[in-house]
Image: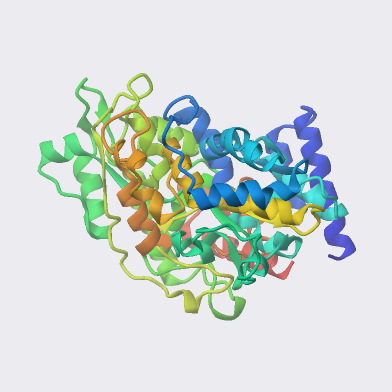
Length: 507
């Protein structure tokens, strides 16, 4: 790390402390860290806001019988983990439902079996970033495990220990029995836990776009779920100005189009990628102003003719709330909204939303024609991983905890939260299947989410400056906001975005 990078990280940490003490606003925090080349772009900020607005249910302790360690795994925790009795392992993450369940399990299961102490601090993502930048700038061991938004993996790859350094040592008893690395949904490894082929951490959560529609309105109009982009637009037009059971108006599409907000960038990627466009081209070029991108932008603006009033002020929280209030009939957005739509005291549309396969893209640019691990596809993802800090003084103990936290039994238990699992075994676990019905915290959207992950998952570029240029307050969503509000034409918008991305790559 050079001196300039170190100073940037320290600056970000200082601004995070000012935000925590109420000396600056979150908006100002995002502006300042953007100037330092950092950003919070991915679903972490989405999850924080969405959990506040659309949480399926308050957190409740895990039900008895859901968590099942094998006898061999339990013995390993007692004997191998027990070597580190008295050791403290620290992690800082968002306060998401999976992190709540797993941190609770750590107190109930991991600590009694191993004698270790787990300090799991759960804060908004801006504070998580502040802690990581402080640690990595100073080489501090204050956190042994990092929670990394996938947009950050390129920035912090050199501050982590490659898990393969442990897992490739097949004779080591530090490796958990039946950990089964192959059970992770394989598409998640390069998408959110790797940088240019190097494993950075282990998958932890995976918000992803799916296709959701109002079953009652489709049935009334004799519509079928769209299978192509043209059909999706036709369904948006056909359902526009339809009615809810109470007589209120339903528009054709609900967007997350808040000007200058990362939510707008997320929405835009679905239309960019589905029409053959991408941010990057071969050899680290930027191609977002080509004809395919223009086509995607025009499609997006056509959708904009059929949206509720106020859509250009909605981030993901506003979009999710609009779905629950019955303001629209078609959405391609975060699967994490779905559990909240079946909660009677928070939703007017209980049981009315259904999922379908994402419509087929008009064309797709292959990843081989992009750079920085960008993968064009309509199913935008925003996942995270957890990684072992190279500065930790208790790496072996932290590695044992990291494995346990991402193991099959623990991740199956975390699926109780209704967040999309990262392990294949969790999708078919009994506790998941029994909730695949209209109920608070439903999992009936899981099949659509898994198919999107395995077949339709889109991933943004991973170069170190990407989060700053694409995140809230950055030039990409700011320029897009000018386009969606009619203040700027498509080609000018795309040229300006191209210049901003080129500058970020050069930087």
